[in-house]
Length: 49
Image 1 (cartoon, one colour):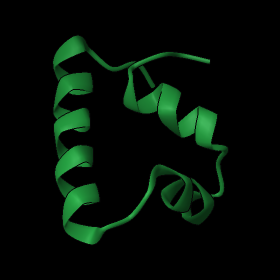
Image 2: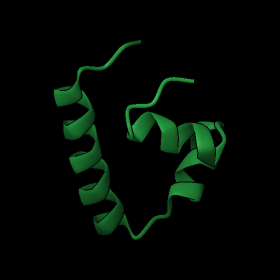
Image 3: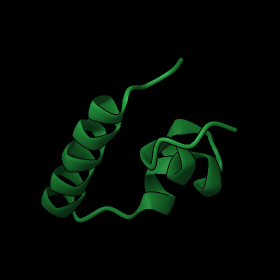
């Protein structure tokens, strides 16, 4: 799936907001999604693997 720059920025804003509300780390989310922390980070930053 390809994201536009606008999509990437919106995803990042939602992520930061929800992370703060839920007091959850990126590592915990990655485990729940069954992906590596690096893959999640790349997706949140709009980087393709």
